[in-house]
Amino acid sequence: MKVSQNQILESNKKGLENHNENFDFLANKLTKQGKDVNELVSKLADFQVAIPSWALGAGGTRFGRFSFYGEPSNLEQKIDDIGVLHSLTQTAGAVSLHIPWDIPSDYNAIKEKADALNIKFDAVNSNTFQDQKDASESYKYGSLSNTSKAVRDQAIQHNLDVINIGNKLGSKALTVWLADGSCFPGQNNFQTAFQNTQDSLIDIYKGLPDDWKLLVEYKPYEPNFYSTVIQDWGASLMLANGCGDKAYTLVDLGHHLPNSNIEQIVSILQLKGKLGGFHFNDSKYGDDDLTVGSIKPYALFLIFNELVYGMQNNPQNPDLAWMIDASHNVKDPLEDLIQSLEAIQEAYAKAMLIDQNALKVAQLDNDVVKCQEILQGAYRTDVRPLLEKARLNAGGVLSPINAYRDLDIRNILITERGKHTVATGL
Ligand SMILES: [Mn+2]
Image 1: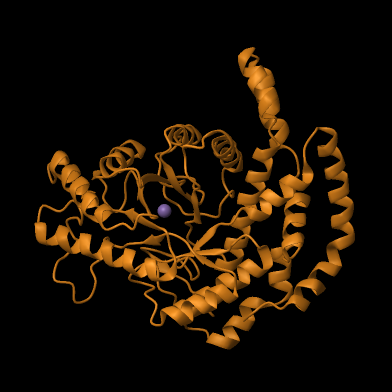
Image 2: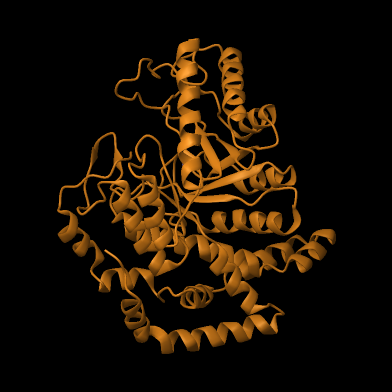
C-alpha cells in the first residue's frame, strides 16, 4: 500500500478553501503579535518523530489482545505502514527498531525501502526483558543487574549486537530500558543491583561508535512491583554520567508516578546537557501508553514549553531523539499514531507561540497572573491551520485522519495482507 501523489492532491481539493481562509486569519493575527509565521510553519515541517516498529499492530494487555486485521507481519510491511503515515502527515520520517523483534533479513533491501519512503533509522532498542528462544541464560531475575555474571554477559552482548545491527542501517543511538528490579522487599540488594547495572552499561558504552548516543530510559514500576533498578531520572542520570559524555537520560512521558512535574525534569536535564531522547504517550494512571494528548494536553504543552526553551537556550544539550511509545488496544494503530503525531505538532506549535521575552519580564516582576496569562494565551490559540500549512508545504494532506478514512487504507491493507496477520511487539 502506497499513497500516491494524486490521492494526496485529490484529498486536499476538498478542504483547501476552508484551510486558506483559516490560515490567513491566523497568520494575520500572529503577524500582528510579531510572530514570524513562515518560520513557525517551517519549524513544524522540520519536526520529525520516529515510529517504533512495535506500535503498528494491536497492542494487548495481560487480559487479551484484539486484532485490527491487516497488521504488518514483517519489517518490510511495518516500514510500508510508516510510509503511509509519513506520506499523509509528513512528520513520521523515522523508524525505531526493536531487536530481536525486527532484525532485518536483507539490510540493503530494507534500507532501500526506507530511503524510497524518506524514512530514517532512529534509535535502536534492545530487549532484555524477555527470554529469547535458544538463549542459554534467563532474565527472570534481571539482565544487566543480575547477580550472575553469565546473565549479565549475555545481556551486554545482546546490546552490542543491537548496536551492530543499528550501525548497518544508519542508526545513531541505542536505547536501553531495563525491566530489572524486584517484586518483594529483601529480594534484591539495591546497591549490588545498581552497581552491576552501572558496570554492565559501561561495557556496552565501550562498544558504542564515536558518533552514537546511549539513551538510558527509566520507569518507576512494572513489570517489577517493589523496586526498579532505574526507577527515575536521578538513577538514569547517575548511570549516564557514570558512562560518559555520549550517555544521556531518556524521558518517557508514561514512566512517572502520578502528578510528577515532568516539565521540570525535562528542563533541568537540558540545562545539564543530559536529555537525549523523548518518548511520547499519555496516561491517566500509570504507563497507560494512550494516544499522545488524549488525557493531559495542557501538561504536554507545558512540557513542550520547556523543550522549546531548551532547544533555544541550551546549546549544551544535543538534538533529541523523538519517538512515540504508545500502545493501541481499541483504536486502529495507524489512526492512533496519526492522532498522536497531530497532538505533538499542536503542542509544539503552541509552545512556540509563547512570548518568551514577555514571560521573562513578567517573571522578573513576579507578576504571577501575567505569567499564567502568557502561557494560557498561547495554549488557547487554535494552531491547526499552521499544522495544515506545514503538511501541505511538505506534500502531505490537510487532514490525515479524513484522508486515511476516505482512502479506505485499513481495508486495502486487509485485502493485501489478510485478516489474521500479527505484528511482533507487545
Ligand atoms: Mn519508552
